[in-house]
Image 1 (tube, rainbow, N blue to C red):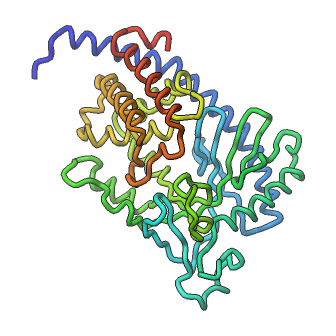
Image 2: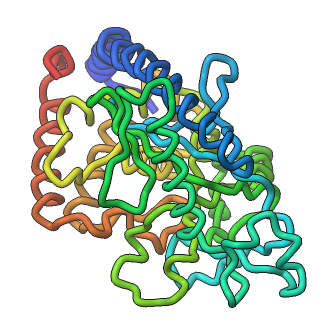
Length: 365
């Protein structure tokens, strides 16, 4: 297909502006975040060492590997989540029956094996390993560790939540989440993935992702709010964070995500937190399905991909629904106020219109 010459000029101008934005704004954000991560992790590691001294079953898994910390997720510039991997599930089976979207349970394979479990006192009468009971015990240990650790003046527990959240130097919030790694199994709720007839992701990458598996996290889920089931406190939240990151290798996928996160931090930090970096990552994954060819993720296409993702975000905000990439029954906007979503839709539209109509918009965004 022949492309009009002025179109080529527009595309190269956009590419130049995006490159400049990436080098100036995005890299500055990344540097600031990696500096914050070092500061935060030093303190969290000290707290977790104290926890481990009191209770050897909670062994710190927050380690630095090739310049990055395993199990650390950046929620935004001042908020982080540390996933603490617990020792193996052993005699527990993974059960995903779809009764609570995005959640699953761990059940004893045989009641007689109760005493063989490392987590015996957290197993309910029905044989389920209770996520809430483990979290409650962990919360008590972390509270004691905060009082004893070397950084006790800089760290305090955030009260009035069942989550384990720390406020560090009055600047950062870090959530520490007990978790199990589920490698080599794939949940039934995500069985539809990958969608047949779409050439992305490559079968080798699909096999890699399914082998790596996912995590089960002990945390509150909006899907469980208001459900009066006994299972509620026992259920674990499924997380695909690591494999989602792996799917975004290649072409300008990660670059697009970094630019969008920077735009979000600068312009979409709104009341009620309607748009998170996780929503953006989810929409980048959907964009990969819509544009499955690697050539569609070459640098000259970056402007088109970013505009496409922003338009999709507006659509999701207006429909008040953002399906999780692997678990489409789970709505990532659940629990968000309608007014906050409407306000966000207007703000994203302003941002998108600016990018579409003004070739130099990125200079002031």
